[in-house]
Length: 75
Image: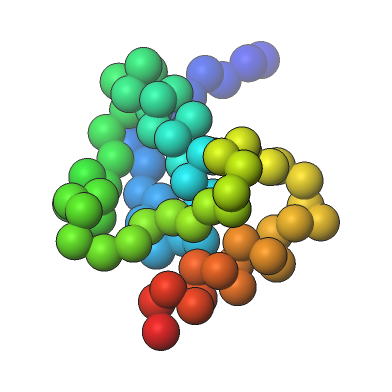
């Protein structure tokens, strides 16, 4: 038996996002008409970080770099 579930809402605020990855994720969420916590993305506080190269790096080995950059802008 297969069960199908539909995602209708996602909350992803307060996560150390890479800006390029966040852009990709937001585009996918909007295309799928999934609601998300839009109040967090009002421009009043930094929600993502980036290096000089605006490319989503999904390699686990670079996670610490982006987490530390995010923590630096939050302090």
